[in-house]
Amino acid sequence: MMKKMLGTFLIALTGGLVSIGVYTKIRPSHTPVTYQHDVPYTQKAVSVLDEIPSNMDFTLAAGQTVNGVVHIKTLIHKSNTRQYVDPFEQFFFGLPYNTQPMPQRGAGSGVIIASDGYIITNNHVIDQADEIEVTLNNKRTYKARLIGSDPNTDLAVVKIEETNLPIVPFGNSDELKLGEWVLAVGNPFNLTSTVTAGIVSAKGRNIDIIQENYKIESFIQTDAVVNPGNSGGALVNTKGELVGINTAISSRSGSYEGYAFAVPSNLVQKVARDLIEFGTVQRGILGVNIREITADFAADKSLNALEGVWVEAPIAGSAAEEAGLKSGDIILKINDVSVNSVSALQEQVGLHRPGDRITLLVRRNNNEIPVHVVLKNKSGSTQLMDKPTEVNKLLGARFRPLSDSELNKFRLKNGVMVEEVSNGKLRMAGVKAGYIITEINGKSIRTLDDITTALNHNKGVFYIGGMYPSGEKVFYSFN
Image (cartoon, rainbow, N blue to C red; front, side, top):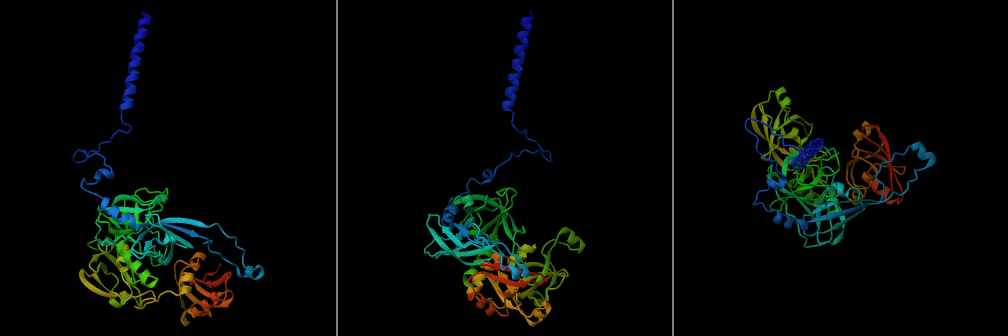
């Protein structure tokens, strides 16, 4: 009897375990959670692919774009670190001995914008590079030369000697709509000719990655997959038109985590045109202190709407002051394009050169009025900058002599100010805009010609002494 009962118990136990095992096998690993709102929640989770309309076809855009996107590889031979040299240590011990560092290699993408070999990419892709190599989609490889770069927008133009190249035509980034499908084309992780799809998630994003005084950050945000190596590659619409240059990702791991950012094509086209024509960007400056209109700010100022950009004050002698802009004005539009953020305003102004006339729609005392502005350059005139000289290209900087009042202000007998820094020797050494060069290799620098003479008479180490307007004395050296 006991044996029979024990057998029955074992059979029941085995059946229970089997039942538990089967339930565990077929039970989903994650139990769906139902959220009860005003109506029952019945929508199932969908993937990006599920959301693509059945009649959507990306093959035309991908086919038209992939041959116009190139793979860029760079080589940096020298150290790019800033050096401080104590004058007393230099007097007793001479200049510090530098060991030759190992070459640094980099890679990214670029977009052919002219059939005779002009290619747009990111400044950070080719920054400080001694050698630039471009590989086309057909695997042909070329040596490229730098035409010009603009750290303020993180863009640069390089050129290869070839003709009849396939290009990616420019589209109008102002016409992009939220939710519009776009493709990212580039070379992530050295995987050449990679195409991914996503939508425009936002426009006019400022993510604070460009560290320049006159930076423009008004990025297109997209969820198309972008990874290291995509930098400088194309963001195109479904027509195969270039609407942005992929520049950055927001990531804690270093790889794609859902957010990618591209420079709008309208700004890209303007910067590229300037770099090709002048070797530098002709930047129109409005000259006004502005701020975002947030909900709290609007409440504090008793504003009825959150649209536009608030004018704190025009800068003395600026284009804004001459046009009659006043503190408390709200800029609503620039040339009929709405601007509801500081970044959007900077983007629209950045599309223009010194001397260009733009029209602002301004709200003043609850009235909307047009204000016509003639933009100026950083020096306060409407003149375009000359093409950089060979010295400018070598050092990667623009200079201007100090006025008598500036010499008195800084208590200097001589000096030349570094007005702008791009790719070149000074940037590699760590020199920043605003630095005042007072001497090179022990010889006083008073004029731009003095810099040229110093470079022509020395083929070894250059020792530069000077100061910043803050009063900080800094010394640099480079080979």
